[in-house]
Length: 242
Image (cartoon, rainbow, N blue to C red; front, side, top):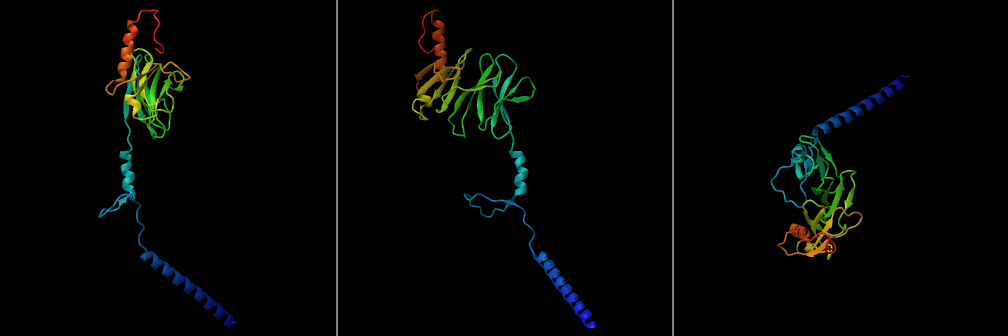
């Protein structure tokens, strides 16, 4: 009986001693381990960094609240009511919003993954035109937005680069430079100029396609055509496309 008790006691002592050794080793390892390092901003591989201390990620996160700012820019006044179009960003890209009264809330009108801009009311304030590209490619297209129902209509061909919009006085015509003839980006100022009536829907119909010089403004084309229209006697046949 004494031998069994002695053997059991010896076994318990060995287990206790082994546990104590493991605990002591764990404490020693914990005390000798370096403290955890805070997260830092790693410079890009294209930068050569010398003698510059690491920038903690916490500083970048704190500074981000000052870097993520937005502004609102006036795009156009409604020609009939005391309303305006503004451009501002609430997500990733600027969109067009309408403000209906002084000090009033803004109402977002366009919702696209790409930035929109150049909002310009029609002469009656029932629609506005704007420009937008896809994926930042800068092949801008011109669109019409109907305020009555929010319908968006593509006015250009969807393939060429269209810039330099000019607007006729008191009617629905616009003129713009386009690369639609050759597809070459350089043509947009010195080459073909497309003019069309914004009221035309469902297809891209050009009112005129003209060659202009480098120093001629697109707006002059519409103004000159306005003068010709005023000088024509009523009932006389006008040239095709006007």
